Length: 586
Image 1: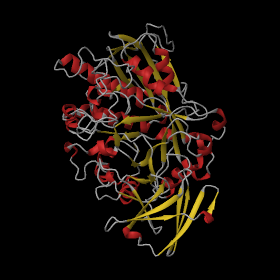
Image 2 (image 1 turned 120 degrees about the horizontal axis):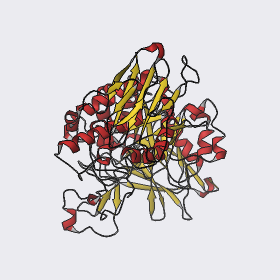
Image 3 (image 1 turned 45 degrees about the vertical axis):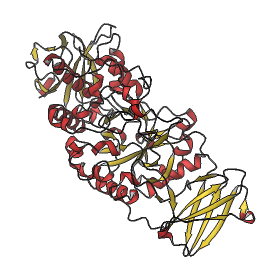
Image 4 (image 1 turned 30 degrees about the vertical axis):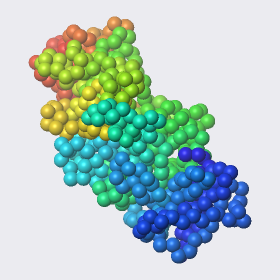
């Protein structure tokens, strides 16, 4: 969207005052569209009521219930970028939006929700459509905001207290192709193309009508009402709501903050994931309406903007920690010289902002696929497997793709559980990508941006098949929630032990040689925990400090549950290959 395409609609009783910035050199017109018969009427803006490039007019006696509008500049038509209501996008795959006049009454505001510090939330990243669109989801309103509401009991059972929605605003999911698609290719059931020569932007990371939720994500075609109801019900269950916004470069910063303010004030959201090449971080951070709003930036903001992150805001501003994903995936598959990086990420707490830690995302392999494929498989995207990153840091555990070998299946299950211990025992904010907790697969596709099918729709049948993984993750979340020491430094000492300490084959003496792949980490808070990480392909010995008066060490969780119980002899833990064991004193 051009930065000049800005307009505001202000309703005054029976008079509607319209302000619009002319995007070009030709005369600007207002186009009124009858929703009864489709007839159109164009009204030129009077140059006498133009200041600079901002045009204005007043309309009287408009039937706002049956009238839509757009702007016309030369041969181009465009929707008001400040439109607070949209029609023409009620059906997924059909995008012909027009603005709608409103009387200022957009329904009740959602209930408020308890605001937590970033490190106290378990963030669940989902796509509105893909989360419940599959027939196995068991919901009535599949692929909608209402479908998310139906899954609230599931989210609570898992332990989620915050959801992050991939773009829920009114984006255009249709990508026009320059040349017609070959008919034979278009008829392939898994093709990203359809017969009309169009492709899908399934993810939604593109420009759009930013002020309104997407109507096709609503079971009743009313995105505003459905989104508000979803937020209200999630908040009443103490689940925060964050939304992803993508902004094209060169947008006026005021426009960006206006959009964000609207989602906070009108829709009651608790935070944003901000994507795009030129996010105006400084303007966002100093906006007084957004002081209590959670903000996730893709990368570290510029030093000038960081100055606006004070002590209060440090718990509400975070950065996506891609290094966590890259380094820990390499540690998981036993790459050399990764132990020190793993240990760093486990306790990493930047002074001025928080970190969003993750092991999978919408633009990577899922956690199941990172242990099932050595290479990406993006053939269905229609780009000859050239799209998506080649740096997946994945390992197939001995066989590419699906396997019936018990050893491979067992190892993959253990590796996923190992990865979840990295994520949920690390300081910062853990972000789970939808379905990873029950081993959802995208068939090795690490960039399914254009696929609206079973590749990107969660198959909830996997929940029954992999219930053990789900239960493991849910229990691990409970352990994290019950022990703040896993989430952040308490800056206090419990008894004679430091808050955190590293241990090797000798207690209190960890070694970080490039060929070492095992380490023990002890956490001393209200309880005393020892986490043994062994990513070597053979059993390793780790020494346990004497727990003093807290009692003997007992096993709380073990990613290698299909093996015999861990052996502890004379203060030494024999940790099986590629395993994580969590011990508690007492």
